[in-house]
Amino acid sequence: MSISMFSMFFNTLWKRVYSEMLLWKHFWVDIATQLSVLVSCCSASFSEIFSYTACRQLSQMFLAIIFFHSSEYVLAITIHGKSNVTLRSLLISQNYLLAIVFSLLEYFLEILIFPWLKEYWWISNLGLTMVLIGEIIRKMAIITAGQSFTHLIKVNHEEHHKLITHGVYRFVRHPGYLGFFIWSVGTQIMLCNPISTIAFVVVVWHFFAKRIPYEEYFLRRFFGSQYEEYAHQVPSGVPFVK
Ligand SMILES: C[S@@+](CC[C@H](N)C(=O)[O-])C[C@H]1O[C@@H](n2cnc3c(N)ncnc32)[C@H](O)[C@@H]1O
Image (cartoon, rainbow, N blue to C red; front, side, top):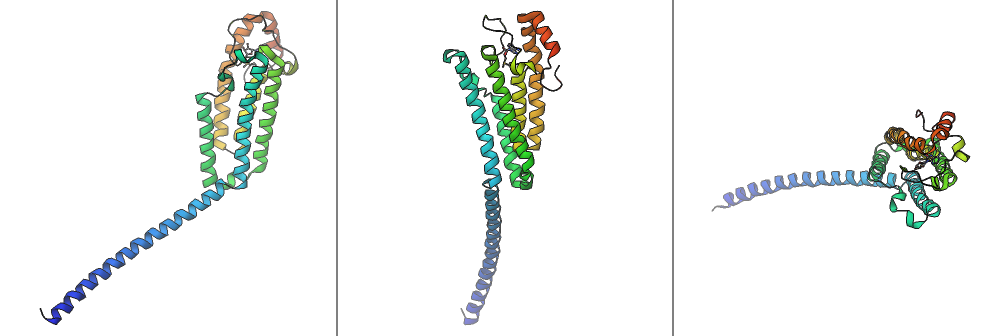
């Protein structure tokens, strides 16, 4: 093989290697650019998720939930005795858990995509106030009704079940439900969650609009004209429910 053939061979080989290297260089530059975009997105996301706003709003939410459920359980045990109370008194159902998970998903998505939405502190503080007011109304109802307040609706009249018309029951017939309604919608306003706020209003209202006539059917059977007169004078407390 002559020298000129060798040099032609190496020339062609080098050109191929060089063009391959150029291709790989573009490939690695592309990868590096995409990685740096991903890293900056992640660090932006981390800074939003661990921002003062998110930490404060989420910790308020978790504290509200933990306090609400544990105090329901403790009050039920105090009033009815440990042997008459089950874990159902924690009031944590599958649908309720789904609603909370949905609302947290909404929160995380919005704080990543529209972080400014969570900065309306007057709205968040209004929600916090609703959580506190709802909690107070509900606990006043439980303490006032005492043994008459059971988490499951009574369908048989028991001796200790007295008609309660004093205290918060003087102003509304269902202060426990009104308190929960305000509390649950308040949690979503506190998180500045527009979709979950509307969803909670609709779902919780619908739940009580069905539950109240059912509960009152038995109260009318237990207390007859006494309940009739009470219902005639005092509003239900849940908006648009007679
Ligand atoms: C979960 S508690 C809710 C009580 C009431 N609806 C409220 O929102 O405050 C349900 C139980 O309370 C009883 N109850 C509701 N109103 C009552 C009243 N005014 N007096 C006595 N018992 C009542 C019902 O019979 C039912 O068993």
